[in-house]
Length: 79
Length: 484
Image (cartoon, rainbow over all chains, first blue to last red; front, side, top):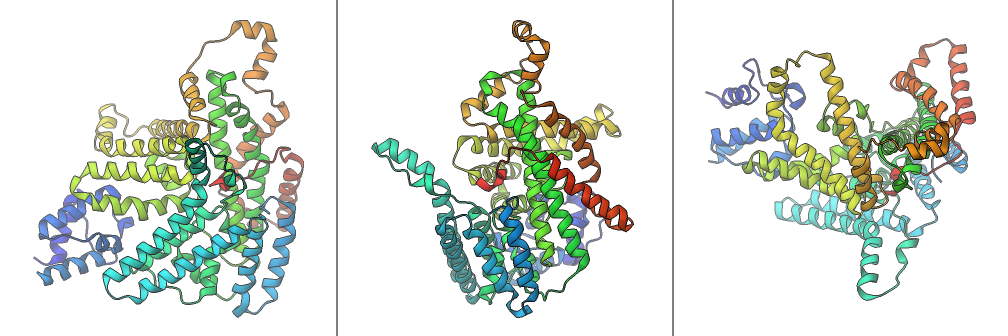
C-alpha cells in the first residue's frame, strides 16, 4: 500500500467518511469536519500508524495534504 | 486625528492627490510619510519612536532568520525579535499596572503612565510578530525593501485599530502599481461613509445606554442591567465594525484591500463560530500563533491538551486587552466556553437527535440566542469599571422584583423613563428603533446601489449623508478599540 493510500484510509477513519479521496492540493476547507480539533486526531493517528513523530515546526508549516505527504515520505526515507 | 475628526477630511484628499500625482516608484514614500504624519497627530512623539523601533527590530530579525540556514540560528533570531516586540508592547501597555503597584509597594507617587498612550501599538506589534513567525516557518520570504516593509507596518488606515494584516497578504498589494479605478474609489467612499453612519448614528447612541448603566450600576437591577449589557454588546460591535468599514474604505481608495474583520458575529451558532466571525484578523492571529503551537505541542494529552490550549490562548487574549481582572475574566470565560465545548460537542448531535431537534428550524435560532447571551455575559466583565461592578451586575441581572414603592412615588411614566429608557430621550430611542432594521437589511448589500440608475444612486448617497448630518449623536465617544 502506498503512503497516499494509507493516508487516505486514515482520513476516512478520522472524519468517518468512506468517500474521501485525498489529493495533494486538498486543504482543511475541502473536508467536512476538518477543524483544529479533528486535526489533532488526524496527526496523532498518522504518527501512530506510521510510527513517526512530527516536529512542531513541521506541523505548523503544513498547508495542505501535499505538505503532509512530503513530510511523511521524508521521515520514512530517513528511517 | 481619527476617522471621525474634521482634520481627517482635509488630510485624506490631500494625501490622495499627492499619491495620485506621484510616480509609482515613490508612492510608497507618500503613504509612509502620510502614515507617520497621521500617527504624529496624536502628539505623542514616543509613539513614532516605538513604531520605528518595532519596524527596525522586526525587519532586521526577519532578514537574519532568512539568512540563516541552520535551525538554531533561525530560532534564536525569531526569539530575539519576538521577545523584543513583546517587551515593548508590555512596557507601554502595562506601565499603569506596574506603576500603581510600585507606588503602593514603595509609597511612591510616580505618574508617568498618565501621560503615556499606546494607541495602535498592539496592532503593529502583532503584525511584526506574525511577520517573524511566517519567515521562520518559511511561509514568507523576508522583505528586502525597507520602505515597503515600514509601510506594511504603518499604513495609516489600519494603524490605530487593525485589521492585523499578514505580510503575505498586504505587502504584495503595497508594491503593486496604482491605477485609478472608479469602482474601487466609489465603493471605498461608500464603505467609509457607511462606517461613519454606523459609528456616529448607531454605536454612539448605544453608548448612551451602556454608559448610563455601567457608570451607575448600583442604581439599577434586573431588566435595566440587561438593557445596559445588550446596549454595550451592540455598541462595541457597531463601533468596531464601523471602524473596520472606514479603514477598508480608505484602503480601497488607494487600491488596497484590507481584511474584513466581522461577519455578522451575533448570528453565530456557537462560541467557536462567534470567534470565526468576530475580530477575524485578531482571532486568526491568536489561533495561528498561540493556540495551534500549544495544541500541537500538547497533542499527546488529547482533548485535555486542546482544552488547556484554549484556556491559555484566551487568557492571553484577555491580557492583550489590558492589565485588569475584567479583561482576564472576559478572556477566561471565552476560554472556558470553548474548552467545555470540546467535551460537549461529541454529545451535541446525539442530544439533538434524542430530543428530535436535528431538523428543527428553531434549533439554529436557539443556538444564536444562547451564544449571544454567553458573549454578552462575558462583555459585562470587559466593560464594567471594576470587578465589583461586574459581580454586582451578574448577581442582580436576574432580579425580577418590581419596585412598587418606587413606581408609585415616581409615577409609572417616570419609573419607566428611569428604568427602561434610562432618562435618555425618546428621540434617541426612536432613531435606534428606526435605523436598526435598515442596517439589518442593508449591511451586506450596500454595494447593490451601484447597479441602480444614476438618479436613484445619487439620491441614496445624498440620503446617507443627510441621515449622518441630521441624526449624528451629540455625544461623540472615541472608538472603543483605540484603547487596546
